Length: 461
Image (cartoon, rainbow, N blue to C red; front, top):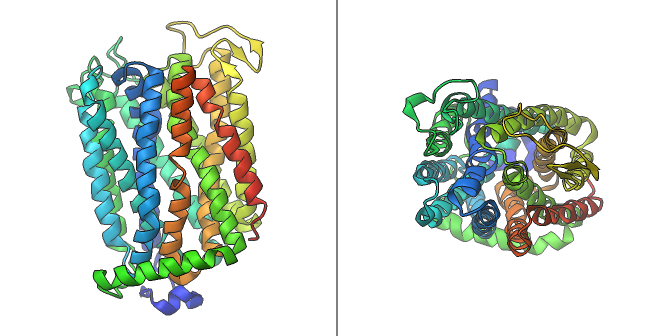
């Protein structure tokens, strides 16, 4: 019999937990939401926008950065407020449903992004920003359900399994797009050698644009089990009363934060390294498109390989989280990311770590040049470290935050993950636009990981 959450339970005296089906259904939220990040913001639609919709890749990278910055500012301003209201009202699912609907509608609108149509750039970037807001807020309230699903000693494994499942969902969605929907405009064939399904036109890049509607449909299908089988927190107060009490609690929490030195240090560290990580994922595909001239199939294949690395990284990180503690997992992940980004900046199409190599040849086999293979290896390290970093971060927050205000602190967690999230994309956009160099724009990420790692050392788990 499933025990419904109560104030006492949230205070840490929970003795029973939901059945396995409820936990598995919750895990599938990560599977449901991942295609937005995999297909749209990283490996397919973002590079397509930069290379085919925008006037040129550097301009596309800067415009995309400005759109992500605007979404990040909205998320930063609203997430702690909404989290506090959710704690006061009790329920999480209505918030997930509302912001999930925003994700679905805005993602479907990306179909309008025709190649070379500069008039559509502004509404297209608006839709991307709204979809990002929907995805991030839905994730905030989904994360807040974690403490009631498993005992504290299994939170790390639950978080890591969720991230790993999300990566698998990203892999499957990429395979569907590359194998059956997106074709090379020159050959008219997909990665698996098929003509695109549904008569999608390679010349107008309908295979790239279909990622928006596919993301929306995917979310609807795979988030449904969570609504059906995972128990929600009980309703406690009407929305109007919850608004007043939630804002009052948020004010109290912010006032107490300077006294909670470890929690404050962690939130500050999370603010900085998450900005770097999100910027790295958002611009990794665009950077590869500009550096090597990769198109959807190459970038998508690269994404599949990275997602496989991320799956194993997140799964292993979840086990290490319960064994070593989340702080050590975060520190190790940051070190790997720092070294990998520094090395990527020393890889160009005709050089690897200052050593001259033969550039990629037109029509050559996939990843046939030494520079492309080096970029692939470094990308796998980034993928393997990114999953554990994010999974262990939400575990560490659960260790540090008061249990009766968990959604509020996940709101603050999202705040610190987003309040400066516009800075990374903005700096990349400004430096890229100023120097007309993608490499100069990406170099700023090194500072984010160094600063995040330094602040993490002040956290006591």
